[in-house]
Every structure is written in structure tokens, then in C-alpha cells.
Length: 572
Image (cartoon, rainbow, N blue to C red; front, side, top):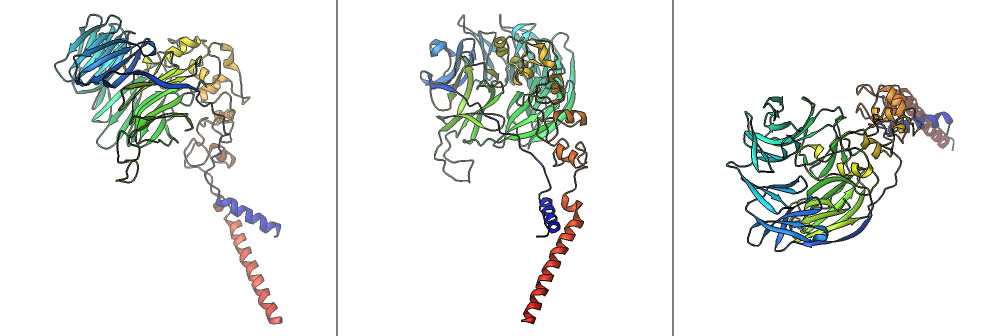
């Protein structure tokens, strides 16, 4: 073939594929989860567990016995029963621990306070249905709880079981969260009320109207101010509302937003929202307002539990999912009427942010009610839907585990797990020597969690000015711009982190302006990677005249050979 025609043909082929450019990052080796053993922890006598928590060196179980009594069971090390008592409470709604020895069990109109050390039980009786209860950690009242009933908030100090404060709002409350030792947030249908324990002053943040919802406090952008994450439910869809301090920043709408989790999944130093929606797990980057789906195929119909922890000791957080088919003979995930051959199937799955499954443990219990970590965080303890046993999965001994999120914190404030919002759990900080009350132990301007999860030393200030990946950005700049300190092109878009920092594109977004073309592809073709309306013209449009020449050449060649063939026949 003539070289010119060959070149035109190659340009034509390239034009067919000129579109979204998305280079794949190199495959990284996975640290799969090492399991020592799986075994029965203990058997619950004459009843099926309803809920399970850990407090100190004890496991506390709520269960209903054969006579429909609600009982509380306290288990010491290796499953030894130390307390088994009947509670004068019906329909327990929630249970949480407080102060290392108190267990709070919330019923419909009654709350039981159990001191598991002194084996003493007290009750708080409320004359109205209880809408919400939270614990007040490190408050001026000591060990205390706040109780929401319609438009009234009552604060009870738990040492003497006395009411110490009553607050009112002018609307029906839906949910509460502790902001700090002096303030509390109340979510209503139309606004967030911020109340002061000291002077009863109230301020409001207006929100779109919702029917029900929950509020969680964090500091997702590390500016030192409390931010509110609201998961609201309207008539048809779920709403995620994010405030930056006292101002509404972002409102997103999803089909649903179940099992919400707050944690730094991508190790950029900022809090992400992980949630379950329509059979899939999503990560919503609160700082960048971007959502992506984790490619995990769940083997069961219902997700029961979603928690986040580093369980393979690679310093990055993994997702622990558990669920089951809930005894259903009809498989709701398949065509209507399909018989489900495994109605009692349940499983615990550990996966990373890329969707790679690190561990799966099958359970014949229909589903999982609770998963917690126990024994220096190296044991996963769980209870199923239909069995009266408490089982456990033993992880390798001596590991350093970051057990970050085990469910909605009882105070509805991320500080319950992470006091300084640095993305490291309080027990882990004690373990590695960083300060749980200060986000930057070595005062090098880099949060302890960002250093730890990116394999830097949160106790060494000298690593802040290093450039580990030789991309022109030291570690302070890597954190500032969102880069990986060990990868010169964090998002694999063809631009170095240094170039992206100069241009202003996002170091963790392959396509910053969302126009379908990667940042590197746009820069290479002379368009603006920050303007979604400025993108490379496909080669077929840019070089239409070459395509025209190519087609005309093909037609001319075909005509020439046909004419020659006809001439040859005539001569013959």
C-alpha cells in the first residue's frame, strides 16, 4: 500500500477511538487478610441475641428469653458470663456504653442504666415516647445523656440519675448530636438548631424540608470548625446535606442513603461519606463533592452492617460488610417469583476501596445483627439473625489495627471515635504514640492520620519537607494539593502532581472538569482542563479533510481497478 494512503488510513482508525482518555493505574499488590481461627465465642442461654456492644474488657448482650423477657448478659474474657439479669424494659431500641462501666438501654418510654461493675440497675421513666437518645461525652455534667421527646430535650446526669437541664425548640425534633462539651445540635424537619447548655441560646441553619433523618458532627475539611452531615429522607428520595461550619455548603440527592459511615477511605487526609444505595456501596468525597461506586458484588439480598477498619495492618482502611437473605425463600434480587435456594445464607466480607475482596466468611444464620471488634481490636465478634451463639473471627496477634467506625457513634459525633478528627481512632493513637487530643503530634502541619496512612512518621517533623516521589512537591505541598507523597502522578492522568498543582487541576481527579477527557489529554491537545465547555475536538472533526481525501482516494482506486478490469476483458 502506498505510504500516504497508509498514513491516511491510520489517522482514520485513530479518529474512531478519539474520545475519553482514561489511563489505568498500575496494578498494586494486595495485602490479603490473615485469619488465625473462626470459632464460637459463647452460647446465649435460652435466647437469641438482639444487640451486642463492647465496653472495657467485656461484651454486653441484649437478648429475649423464652418468656419474652429482655435480659442483659455481660461476658468477660473468653466468653465467661459475669452478669445475667432481667431488665424491666420492653422493645429495646438501642444500647451503648458510657464511661467504661455504664450500659444504657433505650426502650419505648423507659431507659435502663446498668453499672456492670457494681451490678446496679436504675431507670429513667419518660412520660412521652422517646424520639432519640445520645450520650454526652466529656460534657460539663460528667457521664450524661440527652433525651429527645418531640420538642423537648432533657439532660440526665447518670451518677445520681437526676435531670440537670431542659431545653425547648419550636418544632418537632428528629435527631440529635453532641457538638462539644457545651453545645448540642437538634435536627428538625426544616432546620438545624444549635443549643447551648450554658445560656440556652439557640441558632438555626435552614435546610430543605425532610420527613425524617439523622445528623452527624465531624470536621470533614480540617478547618477546626464543627460541620454537620444530615442524612434526610423525603417522600421519594434521600438527601445528603453538608454544612461548612454554620453555612449550608452542598445538597445531594440519592435514591437512598443507608448505613452511613464517615472515614478517610482514600488517605487524602479528609473525611469521606460511605453509604449503601440500591444494592451498591458508594464513596462521597465531602471535600471534592464527587461520588464513585465501589465495584463490589454482594452475595446476599440485604446489607445489615457496614463498618470501616484497617484489619490487614496495611495502614489503609477497609470496608467490612455483612448481611444475608433474612430467611426469604423468594429471592428479591432476581426475577419475581424466583425461589431462593439459600434463605439462611449470610456472610461477612472484607474489601478494599478498589472493590477487591480480601476475606469472605459464610454464615448460615440468615443475616448479621452486629459486628464489633474486641480483645485489643484483634477479634471480630458477631451475632447472627437466627442463632443463639456469639461467634468470633480471630485476626493475627500483634497487629496494629485502626478500628475507625463501628456504627453511628452514640454521641452522633465522630469525635466519639476520633477526638481530634485526624482520621486515626483514639485507641490506635495511644498504641502508636500520637496524641488523641491533637491532630498534629509533631507540629509539622501534616495531620497524624495523613502521615500514618501514607507511610510517613507522625512523630518526626523532618519528613514534612521531603519529596519522596521526586515530583517537585514536598510532603507539605502533597497534603495541601491532595497528592500521594509516594506517587508522582496520583490520579494517573498523564500530568505530574507538580504540573497539576501549577495548573490548578485536582491531583486526585483524572478529569477535573468532568467533560469526559482526562486532564493530561486536554493539556496535550491544548484545551482547558478546568473548563467543561472547552474540550478536544475528536480527530474525525479536526481532520475531516484528510478523511475526505482518504475516502476519495479509495473511490478513485476502486474506480481505477474496475475500469482496468473492464478494459482487460475487452482486450481479451
